[in-house]
Amino acid sequence: EQSPGMELHRETQESIEAARHYQQELQCRMSELQRAINQVEESGRRTSAKLMVHFSELERELTARLRERRDALLSQVDTLRHRGQQPLLECQRLLQGSISTTEELLWEGEKALQTDPENRNQALLDFSKKSLQMQLHSLPEVPLLVDVPCLSAQLDASLLRMLSGRVAEHGSLATHAPVQISELRARPGAVLVRWSELEDATASVQYRLQFCRGRATLDGDEGSGGPAPTFTDAYTGPEREFALAPVDAGVHVTFRVCARHGPKVAWSPWSVPLMGRTHLHPYEWTQGNDGFSLSSRRNMALRTCAADASPVLYTREASLTCGETATFRIKNGTDQRDGVGLSVGSPSDLDSLQRDGAICIATNGAVFVNGREMINQLPPLTTGSAVTFDSERVAPCKLRVAIGCGRREVLVDWPLGQPALSLHLACCFSTPGWKVLAY
Image 1 (spheres, rainbow, N blue to C red):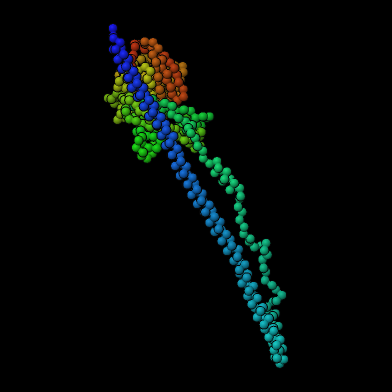
Image 2: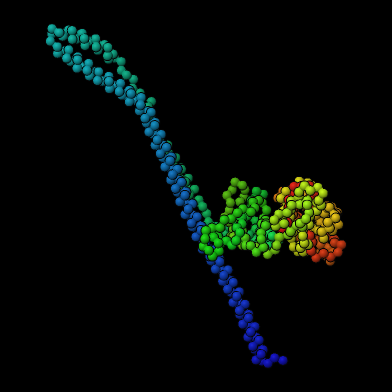
């Protein structure tokens, strides 16, 4: 029996340990709170900078377009003024010549009247002939004011009101992006990303997932204060999950997602970047089958043209356990007789997955359990299709397997001849051209 002093000492040590653990938890929460504060500060600074750049560019572009239009109209005014004045100036020169000639005739008439009587008749006769030549009763035509250009400018006053209204409504702010990453799950040689659904989503909704290898925040590498990271598109389409592969074990990857309500609509703001990684090494296909060519990581297999090689390929180890998910992403396919699935063991003498001890989906969407075709089918496999197998043990020798392809899922029971702790991933390609990635 412990003495009261020893009991008190033990309780004190337990309290110290509890206080130390509590302190660690508080420090973790303080770090999370600081990251939240930094996110608000960084996003506010980034948004302010974006607004300044955008409106400066808008102001510069709008001013340039207005000046271009003003100068173009002024140039048209000069052209029209020159074109309208040219015939009038020509007419003015003719009139001025006639006025000068008439003034000269008047001077000669006055002079003839003042000529001495002896020569007056001859002077008057000469003047009369000259006046007849002048055709004093015929005046040159002068255009009416309504027939000559009268330049004016038509300026739509509603443009200013329209611009003012559009500018007043241009741009908006949001405290949260409409789509956020909801889950990052480690997969063998991959990271599975799931995100929330866009509000009021329709059949035309599209999601866009980007990734950046390494740690990254809103504005740059964590703690570096450096430039914004370079994100790369990983997926664009209607689905709300995607597995990025290959990803080396222990390597951090940062993800972000956005959405839009159709191909002609602008993308929404990006979600908060989230960092994930996988600690699971990728599945490896078995080497040595001459009918397949493997990638450097041996998680992607390509069926080649070796006719005498086995069409069935298994993973090197039976590493898939109950409760885990296996995914096959079809990179290319050519024949409806082929398929992918799971197998108990890796028998090398069998050339099909439509057999006892295996569950598979054929490329036409048919599901086979121990060689028997099920009633329910999945969509046919095409380039880009992803097939998932989720299993749970319902009895020592029975698994319940959910097979998903696209947006459909089939749930089947798989009786096993003996208890199996782990399974092989398998593919059966009888014709060349198939390529599949396992993760």
